[in-house]
Length: 103
Ligand SMILES: [Zn+2]
Image 1 (cartoon, protein in one colour):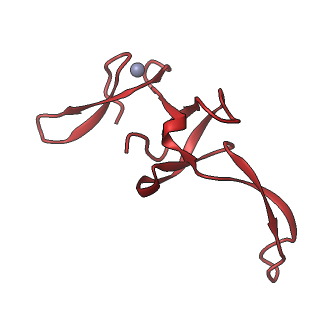
Image 2 (tube, helix red, strand yellow):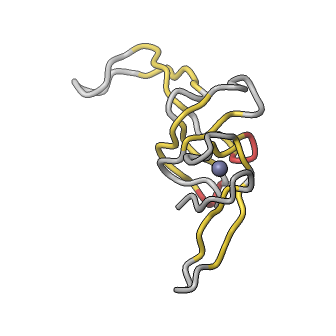
């Protein structure tokens, strides 16, 4: 998957369009990621002992990767991602705007 944990991403579609956030968790199988402060949903919870409080809490819901663009940590632009094979056989991600290696 092109977007990974700890990446900073820009939302390009949906209700949070234009917002930025950091990827907290990636679900490669579902092509979704959990981004801090993005795609908040309201959850009604019931008290479960002393661990959980009853009421409505807001939490993030995983968002589809296709709704996101990676913000390059080198040039700071939302960018598409390319891949490059290094001499040692590692495959790294590169920024399509500035050409820098992202990983
Ligand atoms: Zn860049």
